[in-house]
Image 1 (cartoon, one colour):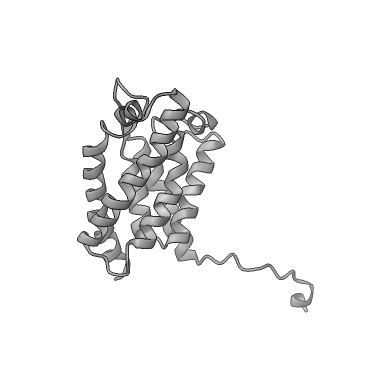
Image 2 (cartoon, rainbow, N blue to C red):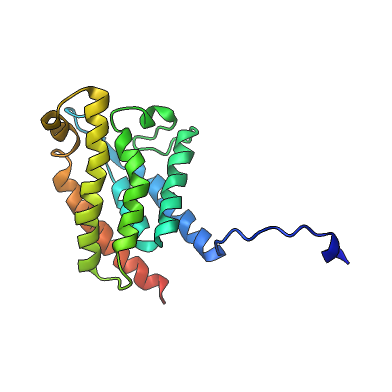
Length: 187
């Protein structure tokens, strides 16, 4: 009898396990965003968040990875202080580093898409270093050039060159962590 009066709601399409993994990845991104330090010659920050984004891509399927990073951006945009440096609000999404932020969901989706089914360090390292790092720089370079009104060379010196070595190391760390986390998940 109760069933006749109940409203049938459509299923969300996410299992409890999916939502839990997404929440853990989102929380990890929030925590890693607090690990930062500035470089005096660029508006960008060195941040461990790139590890969190790549790890999210390596642990979740593409759709869930995209949604997780989009949710991270949304939560920061509405004011939660979860962006690198412990800030929130729309300012970061309109400044010289905005391209990094807008590129992250796409980069995360593509890394997840190309990671393959087998969790191997080599595969994950190739995906994070050859897809994640360069595509992240595309958005950041464009926003630096547009917002700061600098040329291509100056943009490279502000958005790419100072971060390249560290980002490759962080990508390799994310690949290693991704293998370990996926081995634990499959148990």
